[in-house]
Length: 387
Image (cartoon, rainbow, N blue to C red; front, side):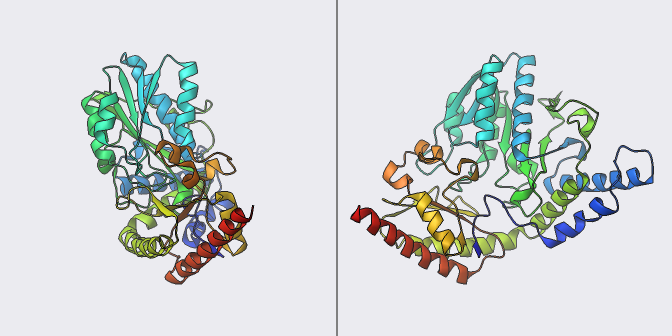
């Protein structure tokens, strides 16, 4: 099997699994318990929190462990809306190509709360310019939320410049860094974010654990995270439920490993991506999606007059795991909302193929992928012609 769908999820590294294992079988106490087993579990949680803080350049008090990146996105948006209410602001600026965890939560908040939402239209390369964001800002804007790295086309956004526009207007800035975390060498200062979402399974950690990084203050005032889960006082009262210690340890271990080898990763992925891109773009009727330069570990190429679902299915039969776009939109009949927002014609967007890499991928695998895609595209077009 050749696995090139790392944007959907990654394999848990053995070192991460080994770091987690004792917290399933030996150090399994409830970290709130006042006995030795509880203290041992609490110490594991404390170390994990400190490791994440060290990797991201934040304080341990600014980390709220969640069950996913989507939960972290939800908490960030609701925190910003509550902050906005307290400051007479009810307007949110986001992007037409954001993750559903952002867009659907904002749809819900529009029904539940008295807020207005504006969506920035991307360029044809999927770029969100700071100027386009600035045009939508109002005196009532409480939040700007822009994904760091687009999960479908791989465009890396100028988030720090966008955050400067938001802050100048007196608004908070949040970034969904789920796809970027472990793939770009950023700290919280590089993101310029008041709030940031991440998820462990995108950088070789376990599924079911994410985090919201929420700065302790904004504009010299306390920024209080809004809890989505009520109950006990875990996570300093910001998320009830007995803590997932194995998950926290796994997230921290995976993030530290990704941070330590980030330059090696970037060099390796650049080489693979360039090789694969050049090979696939030799296929007639192929089109690169997203910014050709501002990208990291995702390659999205569309093939004219090809059905994306058939393309992915036939590649799977050849032992190649790729995708037609976001895993959250898998099975959708219509073309990707991201590609639609970028103005990609339907006959091109319908043939989207997303390939995403990790350190274990090889040049030989890329040669196999190029050959397989070439043959499958040719076959699908011949079948279409016969019909």
